[in-house]
Length: 334
Image (tube, rainbow, N blue to C red; front, side):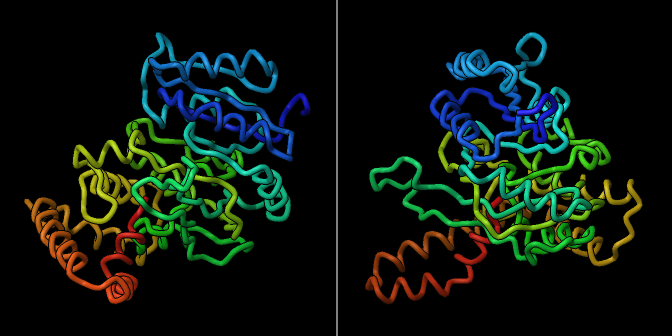
């Protein structure tokens, strides 16, 4: 590694003692070695803090541990910004403490960055990783599946083309936070992450800022795994009703209102994007729409369960493959 590494990897965490060692290990295993890792502790109270400090002590100069004053919990956005500020790399990449990179991940992204020096951000498809437990087990019984980026690969995509696609698919083609490589000057130009978004949608806010103003490149390779588990931010928000992978939910309304204001603030004149945001905002302006939508979906799910219980397996599988609801469920995952 050079005195000034090419890449700063930022890993934020709040607890996660069961996964963080594997995540850090996946960075240490990278075939591309010109990187540094900043571990940002966002107020952990389990063993993750000690694990992170042990890795930093074992790899001085390459891995650094930092925390907020008084070991405070300031949220995901503020923590990512702190990690970036502490780093020195010309490029920035993120890996959450419950996810992993494949060994060739950084090397492929650096190669593409050199081919497209004008790109403010490079991103690829993330594997939604349900089978992480091994031994034939799968979280929620789901199969691993890569995200669908729905854009041409290895081409410079001008702004705000990717942002339009994000909105028109209701987030169905978003990359994961662990599949980005961001040029530091582009990160600085958009102001990094928005601290007011402490958890949900903090990644989509940042992606929106980048793709609204910066050219991007998409790659086809799947080089990171996004672990699906019950303790994740999205899973916990499901229990509170703040998030829903299929239907309308308060967190998305907050994001869309922010995005509409942000596009006006930066003066982005794109009629198609404005219409798409306004169209998706309409349900959030109708009092009571979200609980009604949830009631309808509960009725649908009940009918689905009854059909599945009464239908022979082969017929059921064909119906489920053709189901528009199944398609919408997958397209809406964030």
